[in-house]
Picture 1 (tube, one colour):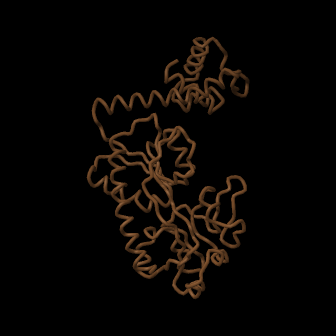
Picture 2: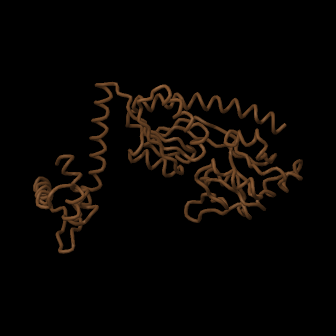
Picture 3: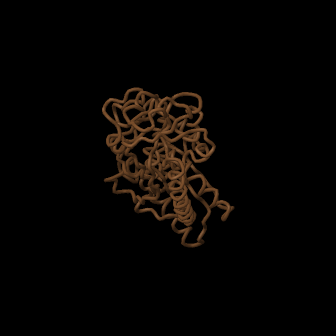
Length: 319
């Protein structure tokens, strides 16, 4: 029951046909058939029912499928840990970033890391917090940076808070709401569409009322707040706000350049109690490569600088 044979077993499940699986694996069909027969012989059970149109998993095959992914991931972990221990190679950073962390500190920290260590190979994905957690859990990436308040009770993860920022709404200069600056409430903003990535239930239920007006809607399945204009890349949000009455949800650091240029204005809402809490997410039982630890150090430094800039911006624009 070798790793190679398990991969062939999983490929046959994926393609449900010896010919298609053999082609995908780059082996002959007789060789694949013999490999599966040897696996079945070793285990003493039938893994597939052979039919004219293809193959179907038996109950024994279903059990092996559940275990195979973990076995192969354990093998990958073992090989990587041995390589790290033997050579101290810092060669690769694989990270998944939530939308707002990506533009706050994620990308900037990658740039700093690469400037200091130009031979590091970097793979960075931007996705919603659920997908970030999934990529960490399945070993696609070594590290995630996303909202961690949603991961309470997930025992497989280690979560470390790295960024805590006050959420604000922003609009274009001349927006009708600016005439109500002294008495502006969250309820009044619901008359306008919001532009943002979706908010998880744990944040939304403490922030928003049951009736959302034009701002957006709740996802019937997850309970997430889905803004009227849902966008996964926050750096494009300003394009919507500059030419309409839509309101952008973000942090002061998210739109620092636009605020300083006067392109958008933070709304002074006194009853908007939103604080993002994003942080590092990684598997408890999986050692971190040196490149990841170096990257985490850069993120901590960038986040400290962001906190100082946001304090300065708040004094300049909100007082």
